[in-house]
Image 1 (cartoon, rainbow over the protein chains, first blue to last red):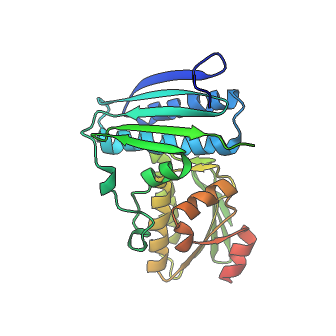
Image 2 (cartoon, each protein chain N blue to C red; image 1 turned 180 degrees about the vertical axis):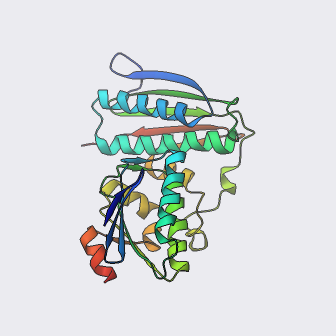
Image 3 (tube, rainbow over the protein chains, first blue to last red; image 1 turned 135 degrees about the horizontal axis):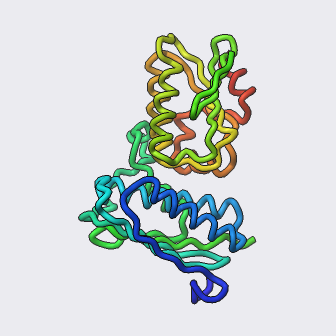
Length: 144
Length: 119
C-alpha cells in the first residue's frame, strides 16, 4: 500500500449510514465494486468483505443495539496494494479483551462471538480504539 | 424428490437429505433466519436424520451464518442424526479452519463423498 492512499491511483470514500442491514449491504457492494475496479483478486476481496461485514454487523448489533436512529460512520482509503478502513458506532464501546476466545474447546459449540476473531484472522492489522466503538483495520494484499 | 425453497434446494436421496444452499452470500440476517427455519424444517419429525449441506454455490458467509450451522448441528445430534458439510471452496474452508469449526463439523470434499459417508 502506498504512503498516500486516496492519491490519483487510489481510492477514498466515506459513508454515514443508519443501523440498518440494507444500508450496510449498500456500503459493502460499493466497497466490493471499488476493489474490483482497482484490480483486486477474489481472495483479497473476500477477506475485506468478511472483515467489513463483521465490523459493520458488530457496530449495528452490539454498538448501536439495532437502533436505526444511531449512525455508523465508515471511512475507507486504499489503492491496488491494500486499504485502511475505520468503522465507528454510537455505542458506549467495549473491551475486546472481554470477548471469550471462540476457538477454545469450551466455546466451539457456542453459536456467537466469532466476528472479531475473523476480522483479526483475515486483516493485517486490527485496532479497537478506546472506549471500543471505533474499529480500525488495515489490509495489505499478499505479494503475488 | 426435489423442491425449491428460498435459501435451500432440498433433495431426498432415499431418506438422506441433501440441502443445497442457493445463495452465493450468506450474510444478510433475514436470509440467515430463513436458512435457520428451512434447515430445522427438514429434520422436523425425523428420527436419526442424515443431512448433507452442499456449499457449492456459497462464496461468502458471516459469523452469524456459522452460528446457525452450529445450532443446526446440535439439533441434528439431539435427534441422534449426523450432519456432513460438502463442496466448500478454499476461502470458506479457511473460515472453518480459523474458527476451528472443522473440529466439530465433518467436512467432505464432494457431496457424493458426504452421502457415501452416511450410508
